[in-house]
Image 1 (cartoon, rainbow, N blue to C red):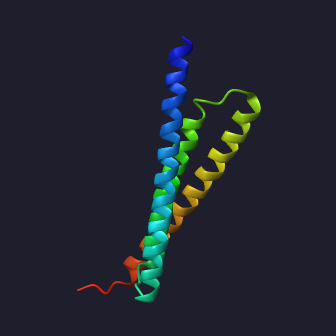
Image 2: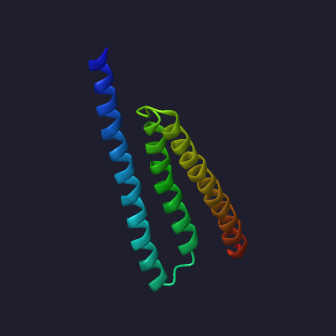
Length: 112
């Protein structure tokens, strides 16, 4: 049984690192694209940045959920739960911002 627990812990650890890496990579790429869009004065800069941040946070949130698999004591559970709640709240706010930004953009598009 200990062997299976060790495999689960190692697999979850690698998956956590992978999701954390992907989240950071998405945020870096989004930031670079945002800087390029700022220079080119793209009207969709805020929308694209919000979408990229939301995607990056989804990867980070996934890693935190996986982290609950390997938590050993109650204090770690509270810390992970707090991080999950904060990231979920930020994700909800970003999705709200995306919805508002899309509505504003669609209102400003001239109709044929």
